[in-house]
Amino acid sequence: MEIMRVVDELVCTRRVPGLQAASLRILASQQGVLSVATDPVGVPPGKWVYTTSGSAARLAMKDARITTDLTICGIIDNWDE
Image (cartoon, rainbow, N blue to C red; front, side, top):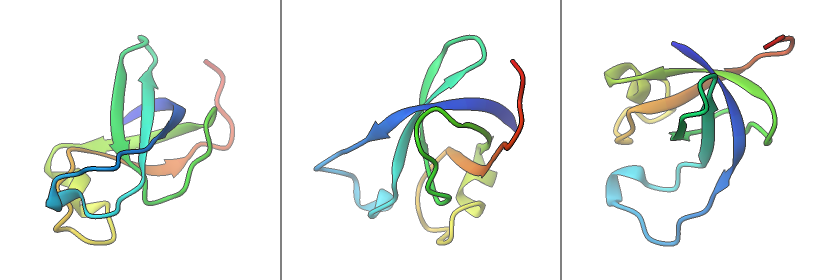
């Protein structure tokens, strides 16, 4: 798991079938590295979240058939950088 900040929403009009209609977010790590994650939680930009990656990312989604390797698991209410 890693703590990251949501930068923005990502809208894609064409996707591979494995992503279905999953919401996507652009995340920044604490080192400033940008990544794209699926978002089953509905996090607005600017919030800190904790994520899971690898095969566990699929299991964090409502439908484990969604092919993702980074998923937002929850919103962090209080976090000081």
